[in-house]
Length: 154
Image (cartoon, rainbow, N blue to C red; front, side, top):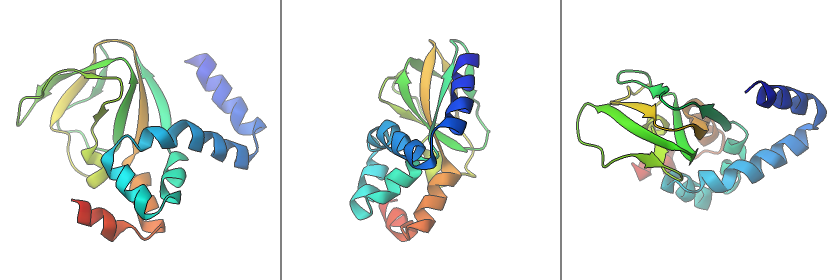
């Protein structure tokens, strides 16, 4: 992690803003489009996904680490880039099983960042996750005038 953090700090100071934006779009936009909500919004306004990509980041979690717990505020949605997550506890319904590469978890945060988590998620293996902040998503919706389109999806 130290190496990754050092690289990110040096990249922030070395790369010009337009290059950082382009890199974020190439890294994250295709992955964002794996969630139907983002795919639909991109059809309404393609640039909103590129804008959202600027807020996305990658996080790495060791095996047996807690991703989030029941009752926590839903501030981010996650896409599993690599690894396996498990639902350790769920309040309302049984979960169909482990979450693996290409699967989203916690995406209800995008609907309302103040919602509480209704499950506890742990990492079964070393896991790389794409993190999409819910507040940034809501901000992008507002900036592009897409709040109504998004609410119609729900």
